[in-house]
Length: 312
Image (cartoon, rainbow, N blue to C red; front, top):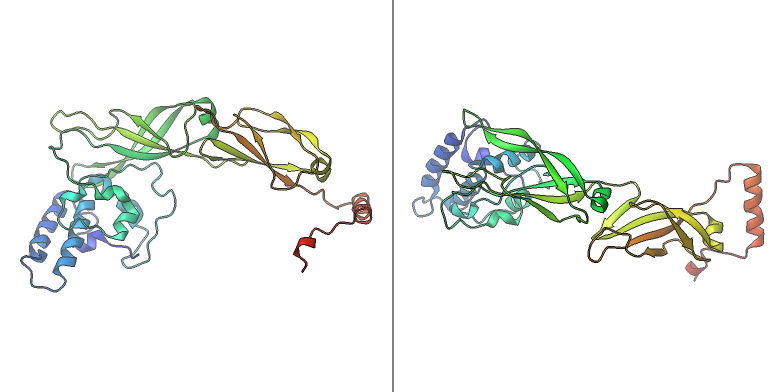
């Protein structure tokens, strides 16, 4: 899909105030309204104006769009990189309240399906709910933790321009939390209007990359290297887990890719997940005369062709 420059669609500079955007939208909406304009592309232009206004009139959406939009030019192929919105807050909002709210694929790629939310049935008294992604360590899911997180909050300055402000929150990470789960912080969202209650903040949990472990739901996986003789003869080896090292029995004649299940040693829960050791074979280097001699002796001792299954 192509990147859309919402500022260009509304004919305003990126430094435009919220009032500038409101005036520009109203002027162009009257000009291109399908019931008024005789231009062939009036309906398409009217929808584009509604989409652009839905984003730029909202300080949160505008800040998110500005963060991504600075990297693109009108007409370029657009694909948001994974995790671009990590730590950044924006809400579904009231996009459906705008004429022409049949938003484009570009809009959906940037803001997701939440952009199709309809207008609220009541006045905007309660503050909006905010959403953010946060990275935690896998160990936090095992033991729980207290973490201080930093979020970028869009706000309006005295001139009506959107700025980003840093906000720090102390968050309790509960034991057993999973990737993709949302934590609700009541009252930590957008401020209410006319004395209304503040909205809530929803934190979507993601795990920081770990050099050894990877999680899938509550299950955790570890690539466990074995020496050839450990795999062939069987052995008792020390395997790391997020909860501390354990002794693991390797059955004889184990092959690379075999998974050994450690029941209940995954992420805690009811029931807890499992930890799987995925076996790999690590070959000693033939970097000395003695090592090369040993490899030659093995070649003579075994009638073994690892590619026999490939032969016709």
